[in-house]
Length: 114
Image (tube, rainbow, N blue to C red; front, side, top):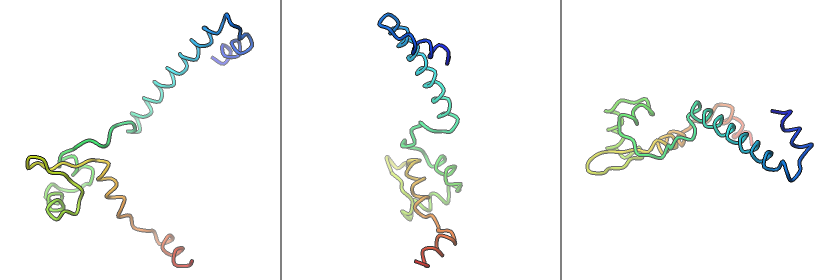
C-alpha cells in the first residue's frame, strides 16, 4: 500500500492520474468500512433521537416501570403522550440524567476557594 502510493507520487503524470484517483477512491472506501465498523462497536452513529417506549426508558434509567410511571405522573421526567401512550427520546433522557450531575468534593472545594 505504502509502496503503491510512493510509486504514484513519484510518477504522477497525466497518464496515470486515473490510476491515482482509483487508488484514492479505494483507500477512502476501506476507511469508510472501517469507520462504520468502529461506530457500530462504540454505539455511535445510531440515531438516539427516536421515540422509545417505557420499557426501553426503564432500561436506560435502570428503573422499574412503576418508578418511571411515577416520574411521568409528577412530570419530573421529559416525556411525550400520543393516544394515551407515553414516549421518550433516549437522547433527552441522557441529557436529563446529565443535568443532575453532582459535583465531586474536589470540584466543590476548588469552587469555594476562589
